[in-house]
Image (cartoon, rainbow, N blue to C red):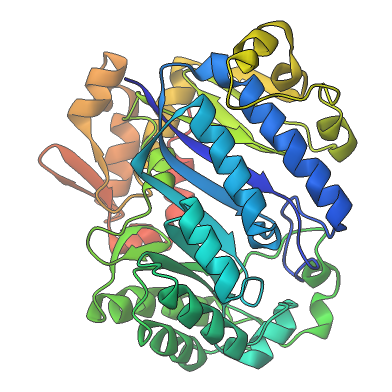
Length: 401
């Protein structure tokens, strides 16, 4: 049976952070309720397209999904369960910001089936949080984390961000030490990206100086060493986990070139999907998204859904940028997504997938980066070295055909 990962985009937030270029915005409760209704319609209407598939993972991203009521998250999951095969061991992740869920809400989310939380801390230093425009303090995070443990969440990721304005290696290590003392199961450690159109980009001269290139490289290098000493192994360029707690949802994306049975389906505003050799994204126009066959009221627990879905095209009507991935596209993805994983890629899996030896396509590229100690080949496996990870964007770009 083919499996798929499901991404559900919740675009609402209290306010935009200074660095944020994601599809997100503040919204009143009425708009949030309208959106949840439209989201359930989309999920139901798409059911025929993905019949016979089992849902391996569900990931609520945003925005701040925890702004929704726990009952709304439960309704969305109930809609998924009514239309798709969602097993008891399906990984169900909810992104949340500190302070957006109290004890009762966390219990209700856990009872609804959410079994993994991804908490956006970013920094344990309140001054840095203020610079980023975060809505919370470290103390808010700490309360949220302890409440999540009390609600029986035993799989928690903490998002952290380095190379912040005014940040030093010592300051970053302070954040890492503070967070690892809490013993979360997973840590995502990203470098700050300054994106055009964000508050940070437009006002960069008013912020403390960013770490220089040498400092940023040092921060990057000490992260792996420090987290390894605390029991966290890097399994992807920016992700660290205790054994057995690697994020299954993101691994579907990174390993799509190998795992041909795993599709990646996005529901909600602006969500992207890759199914087989097809790729598309949903509209980013909220009004257009909300109006998708808005008069239809579906009974998610009856066979009525199947009859209505056969006649309506709401799910198709909101799709944009549909493209058919060529063989070259798929080979590129195999390499630059697979090499993000520290385990690397398999030459035999490449040949089994595409009917041609890896060296016949990428021989020169492999030799170039192996000679520069950026790639290492061990038997069937090829992976980035530590030096290669430091300049991964340059190395991976060389695998574009």
